[in-house]
Image (cartoon, rainbow, N blue to C red):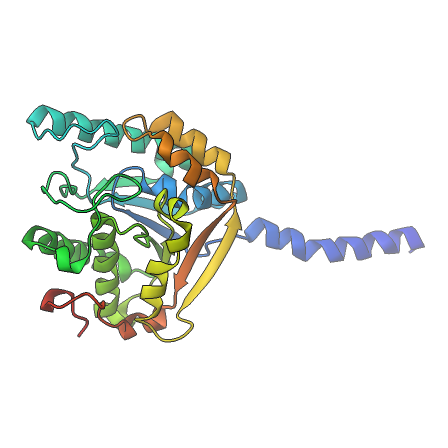
Length: 303
């Protein structure tokens, strides 16, 4: 073997592991992905960069992808008319479903690369919930603001996600509730309660994502919700994962599909970051979760 042949063999051996790694690599190793969304549009705004990254890696089509939108009945649009007629609720609900399904079809590459579910819970305006305005326009709140309507939804979501969290080779993507939107908070806490109650029976890896535009609009408060979760867990129970994403892609998708929700006020927060962050919650600490500091009722107590 001459020097040239020897050099080529050495180069081939050196490259082979990296090529194999590139072909098999996925930012998210789990096979079954569940995007657990408070509203239509939250998955694009919070995890759109991640989904785009998985698509570019070539792994998204090999995975089982499921989105479940919990508060899927709505009368809320950017030019919000606080009207609760049958026609208004029907028209807005259908519009938001069509917007989100169309965006998912592009994000995942085809309608048959994902499954889209809606739970049919009333969003905050339909529940006649009132709270201080968040950066995205919705009402804020937490456990002290829960009425029976919020308690009922919280308990139902916890029951609904329990079978998901018992699945092997599973990842569940959950919004942190930055900005404290009452619906985001309800979904997050219900999923965390289900994970806590399952303890070692839970097999699904939970990843938290930073809600947008709330996170970008309030950078000084971006860590508040994460820090409150960390305070309820053992040290090092949460691991940060950061990745670059094409923010122009997310902006164009939002403009293209979400006509009922488009607001120019969303654009600066969405443009403010070059990276998306997700936070991996160590499964071995699910049962160690402590009660939320603002919970004073039995339904939200971790027992």
